[in-house]
Figure 1: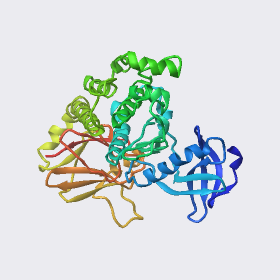
Figure 2: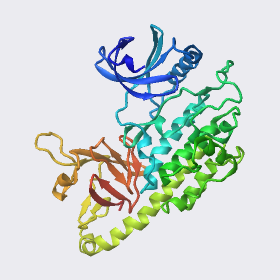
Figure 3: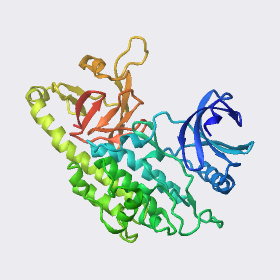
Figure 4: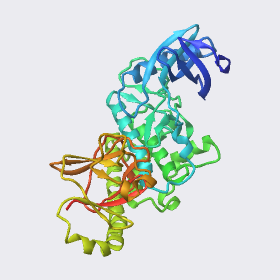
Length: 411
């Protein structure tokens, strides 16, 4: 359907093909009424087989339109026009997770920060009776480098629907990411998505497929008879606990696999907490003792007790004002509001700190740190924070605003 470039369908001006599947083509298109770019998935009903897929196409639009989750691609519109059906979706410029596959992750926490939100999106879909059945890197789009969006529910199974679109014994999905029950053509449920997401995580961590073979058919057969190679053999950065969680997700036996996506995600989050604690002990504490202690001894007696930040390279202590909210950034003479914690005198400008970069929040539970959609990011123990999602801080945490690294002490 490349000949549709430049044509208009349902009021949307098709500009270029950005993806192509077995039955439908996805275009980048312009919506003049709202002056915005969208992605539009077009099925040619009049082509051979088009009518057969139309029912599934309509079902995809209805199912996904009912889902409301920050990590699921939004559907704006559906229509049928001159022998073509189309679904209008949010346009994502960042491409898909596929471009990150092939190179082992240098930071396991970064890979987990992308997979956990996708797992939460799938858990939500499962709670609504929808099984994706085609989880793969190409269907995980990146709104930002740290914001994944699950897309393409074209093969989704909707629980409770009496009419079956695919027959039992039909293999549905992408060969490289199929679960064992998909390989054998059995009826699948939410645990199938767990297995597929496990394969994606394995590839992110190791740069390899757990069931690598010369052809898709060989790969499909391999997962029926062989266990995946230990991810720690492929990437020593993978911890024992992360390997245990990952291999459970990849179990051939349904009863041995995670019972629900929620449980899988919960275990992944526990691994992240372990990584953060290890990072704090191996990175933050040596920084505190080795790089700060010489200056800290001379300063600590003159400092009032209370929360503070220590600049890692110099050991300079910055007291945190005892306010409910403390703005962190760089002073700007053109702005009326100056940050309560100005990092400009400490190299904030050259380090890439935004004028309104982040915010400390003082709560009954302790101090929290929140990123304010900064350009270069806010990190705690080298895990990038999502904007407007405060994270609890603990003494010894390594905090990084862009390239400026500090150590938090609660006092």
